Image 1 (cartoon, rainbow, N blue to C red):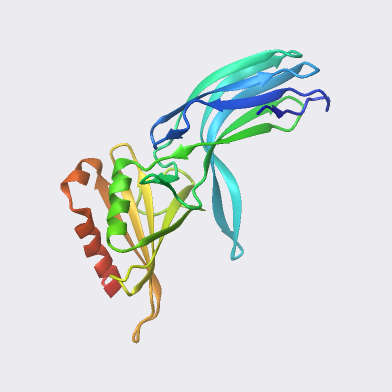
Image 2 (cartoon, rainbow, N blue to C red):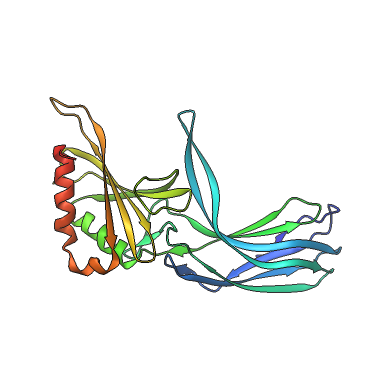
Length: 257
């Protein structure tokens, strides 16, 4: 659907529509599409047109969670576009999803809370910049799929995903936020109330941050326990990840970490 842009003089603005030819992608893959502009009643000058990925990110402000939409992986698709009344201009594009793009699909199902979109940004002379947003699905990488499957085999139940502002130490993170995949506790690890898994993916491997919420015991208080695994993609088929994660989670549940 075309969306109206504000004209510099306040009336007769142009319309914009972004059509995605790629409804789904994996981190590192490309989304193809076209930005379609249609002139309004008056001539209009666009200083630039770009597309980017966007997702909702939470950040803590004075002990409260504040949510905002953050863009990343921006790609310029047009410069100095002059639109005449009624004129149609099409700008084909391809934009690469950063390896750290949050995933929204795993094992053929949507991850509750997962939301990623392609956002079109138009810089308009003399007016507020305009945007058009179109959702896109992001599927788990094969390595992420293997590890999530192993977590579920250990009895944890996937709850939801969200993105948090900040940086995780000891990882290859480049974006100013990261995705947390939350699981309800498993009966196999009664000391762990819940589990959060974060993937920081790169071209040759990924860092897996595992955070467990440990219940209080008779002689200890409840606390968060974190473990970071640095994994080469070539190692994925060579390791029994269910057994490997069990070893780490058993130590977390017992407080050895």
